[in-house]
Image (cartoon, rainbow, N blue to C red):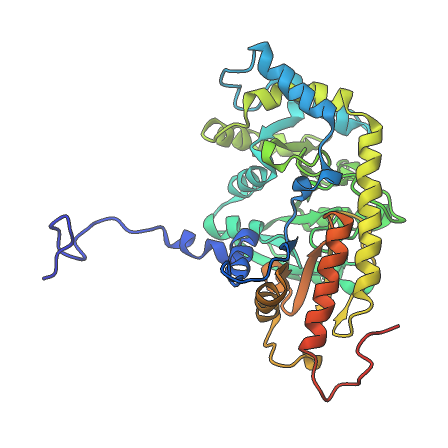
Length: 433
């Protein structure tokens, strides 16, 4: 029998990898983008810069640099010497108080610091909430298209996933009838992302009220992913799901990553929007605290900086971010309308993304969205996320949170790529006026 370098026969080792983790990258935006970028020939003589239209991290661009007040707050926290210790598992009390006050400004009731639990970014908040809800036979309702990290964590925890549709023809509103038909006695929660990643939509108050009443009817909680809160620039203002906490219990997930453009600072939160105390009565809060006892904490010095970050950030910074996103959203929408094989169902009104549909019948030698993005990266050095990564095959998610000149360059290359691969039998008027 063949033996390895350690002298042990193959097959005799008693350890094996966790099978539920082996395919996790297939549900990861990072994993898919890594596969797309791998198509770029690093030895190529093409000296054009790579254009990242597939990510959700605009922090590398000067026009999206974070507020100087935020930087000063972190520096001050570090220099104080007070935040080199382990924090409480639920988070530092001043940080929790500051976040409670910050979020209460949008709500009809006051949050308590005890309603706030600090996490290592919003990704850990998702991990914790899904783990807390895990039980044999449970299922959770997720939006399609949607952020697949929820599905990955659900699979890891043995929770069945059922997808409800967001309707492109209705500005990506929830198909409430379809959602209701999916639920049964084992359904524990639904996830709603607002403002919407990957769709770039912002739900109205009226639609969110319908969502809340549907969840109440089904007897399930709402997990409200609001990591893009207030990053809106269309006709609909941001409305937090916590507005309807009197109707249905809501766990709100958020972070400073997007509004302050600091995803690397890894400071997020879970907030219980539950004036009626349902989450305490059902011991969800107790379980959440128990999970935090065995998980890692966000960096103490970032927690220490939070009160000053929130208090001191100049409104000009927040307005500037919105102004740049409005400008780049306009550029993106207008440029995409010029490309015949791509259709955009609605102009983005929030976040940093837009979902567009591919018409493969107009393209030669392109098999699906993954093939499209792989060849686009190889030939034009433009990285776009295929829709399969968010549950919508043969669509694309395009990020417009990049420098305006880089965005225009990337979209011109996208247009050239589509022209180059257009079917010769198609109408010669490939570019729409």
